Amino acid sequence: MRTASRWTVLVAGLAAGVILVTCGPSAASAARTESSAPTSARTAGEALGNYRITGIEDAIGCLTAHRCVAVGYGGGRAPGQVVTVVGGKQVRLAVARSASNLIAVSCPNRFGCWAMGPPRNGHDGWVLVKIGPTGSITKVTSVRLPAQVSPSFISCTTRTSCEVFGTTTNAKGRQERWYLASWNGRKLSHRHAAGCGNCSNVYFPGGISCWQTTCVAVGQWWCSGSTCQGRDAVVTTSRGKVEVAADLINKGGLSGVSCVSSSTCYAISVDSVVTLDNGAVGATQNLPVYAGPIECAGGTCWAAANSPAGFVMIVNGAPTGTPLADPALAVPSAIARRGDGFAAVGKPASGGARVSEVVIN
Image (cartoon, rainbow, N blue to C red; front, top):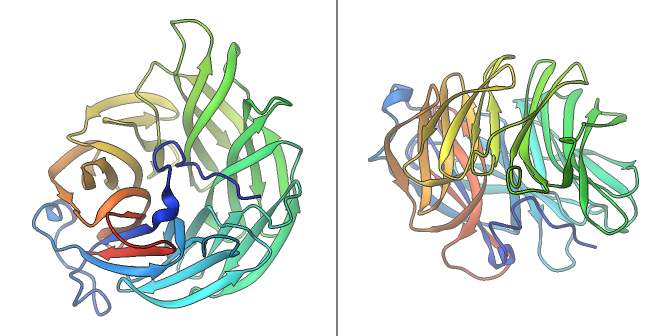
C-alpha cells in the first residue's frame, strides 16, 4: 500500500515527475565554493540550473552546501530510494527495499540524515532509514506504530534526537489527533498531542521544526461551526513533552515551519509568513506569491512558491527582494537550506514518468 504524502492536496498527480530546486552559487561553481555574496542580496537575478534525477521524490535535505539527498521512490512498485546530488547532479542512487516510499528526510549536520516512510508489507509499521555523509544508506530500521497512525514529517537536531509528526485516524478513516513521537536512532517513543477540544477532524499537518530540545509543529484543525472551521494550530514540545497546543485565528493554512532558535520560528501559509515567539503568533507579513514549505538559517529563510512556481527570500519574517521564478518547475513539494541558498524538490513542468529534477542556483 502506497501512503499518500503530505502534499497530496497541492500536488495530485505527482507521479508525473518531480523537480528538485537548489539556490546558491551558480551551476558552474556550485561544486567548488559557496558564494560570498551577502545573504540579504541573494534574491532576483540569480541563475537557476535544472537537472533531472531518477525517481519521484517527496523531500530533500542537505548534508553540506553542495551535497543534498532527495528521497522518494522509483515509481510503480519500486521501493523507497535516496538520490544524492552534488552541485545539482545525481551522483548516487540508494534503495531501501523494505520501504514502499520515503516521504520525509532531515539532515541535522554533514554527518548524516534520517529518512522515513511506510513499509512495503502494508503492516502498521514504519521504516526509518539512516543516511551517511556521502548519501549512502547505512542502516534501515523497521518500527511498530500504534494502529491508525500516519507520520508525515521528521525533524532532527542530531543523529540521535529526532521528532516525528503526523496524525491519527479513527475507524472511519477520519483524522482525529496529531501524532508526535521521539526517535533516538534505536527506539520510537510514542505520544499524542492534544486536539483543539471541539475538533471534528484534524487535518493537514503542515510541518515540524526542532531547535535543540524544543520542537514546533504547525498545521490546521478542522472543527464544527462557522467560527472555527479551518483554524490553524501550533503545538510546541520541550524535551518531548507537549507545552503549548494553540488554536490560532485563521492564517490561511500553515504549510511549513522552520525554527531559528528555541523561541523564534517562522511559519508559512498560503499567502503570508508568520513569526512565532514561544509558540505564539507575532508579526504576520503578506507574501507576493502563494507559498509552500519554508527553510531558514538564522534570520534568512527561503520559501517555495507554487503560484507561480519559484522561490521567495524572507528576512526576519518579511519577504525581501523579487521572487525567483522557475519556469521549469510545476509545483514544489519540499525545500532545504544549502549554504547561502536552498535546495528544493518538486514536480517538473515537463517530462516523463519516474523522472525528477534538481535545480541549483
